[in-house]
Length: 605
Image (cartoon, rainbow, N blue to C red; front, side, top):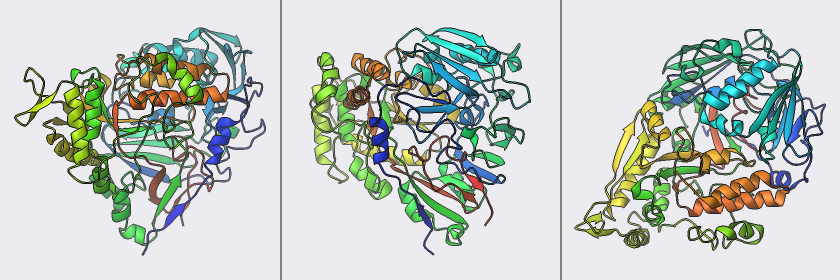
């Protein structure tokens, strides 16, 4: 039997329309807020457009996760936490719509107001908002959460807090944040911090908790059961306070969300085949095409869904740590890119079915254009011309191999670049003038079999230029610790970017965060041009300038040659039980946090 495939499409023009629409607007619509103009949904909206308000409740969704965990507090740096927990447990004042890149709607807050220049933002809490233990969510809880997360929480929360000049209670249920810098996105970011229960942490070191304390929040799900490193079970709270809030209509329909953990991808896939888990995201197109023909698929008990999205590609690949001497020279990084035989790897791994990532915002209107920088993009970059790497202004594209295993042209280009940087092949080994060999370590996470296969091919290519790297496989805890302290030469890297890039770009690519442990700037980029483009996208007063700033940032990063990109996933592939359903309307962001399992439901067929 041919596997059943469900395909749902959306017009790419919707993204362009949203990015191009409207001018500057103040947050006059008290039910929500947008970066530019007004939110798309009116004050009396019934539900998010991609949710089904009539969905039944009940059932179970279980997914297979590779790795382990030793903490259930997703709001601090310490420990290895299931990545989903901050989305399940972190309820905030406002909620993000996956159908609008830059709009938020009231969740814990019933209304939002801003100053005329967004120099302050004020939220009013909904009456009746409660934590999962039945206690009320108060302004005191909000203020404690913001200060605690901003001082001892995970690094993702620190940048916002440094831009808050004052936080004050302005009414029985109202809190105002006043900012110390011009930054239009801050009014939105202020609505997106998780709210925790202050009383739970009296006498407890918040930053040091592991599995002994699960944070109490107001979210629809609570951690019901777990076994460290084995599974986490979350149960839908039947007394959830916000079930009648429009933002929540048709969401959080499934009674149990269970995360099962396995040692490697093979074990995880086998668990899905035998029904131990009932939903599985597949990132390997070759496996999707060749191995999803097992009996449950043939019998129709498992459905294969192909889901489009209109997100930027982000960057996935192997990042080079510029803090290390081996990769501080851009010419060496360029050589590593030429030696990486993507055409051959793509054919070997996917049958050439996956297109390559071409820049950080490829597959979107925010991605850099081919050829020389033009117009406002060039205007923004010109002041930094002396510091930009070749290609940023005149145009840059990734090396293209000839498809053969030997990739002679790529090998020759790699040798030439290494020679420019002072390295030559001597007695079959790449060495500098003093005879020191060029080598480095590639750090991989245990269980990442696809990455291991890619690196095996890459190591063979590097041998052709006299380079022999060391490949180290670390368990999940060691991998996290080493990457968070930047203790690596090259490692697997994934950063997702959105159609609404903002302050998080400082954490990804900003100079000030480059040496802060726990950040996302794994490559260690310190670029005045990148900093300036981030600042410009945050302060732009027109959509045209905003888009130009992102395109310019994309040029700086891509021409920086920090990452060896692999494939992009312009569709999502999810295999799931026939009893798990989702609405026909797919949001612009597609399969993204906030969609599965949020708007899915369980109904037996």
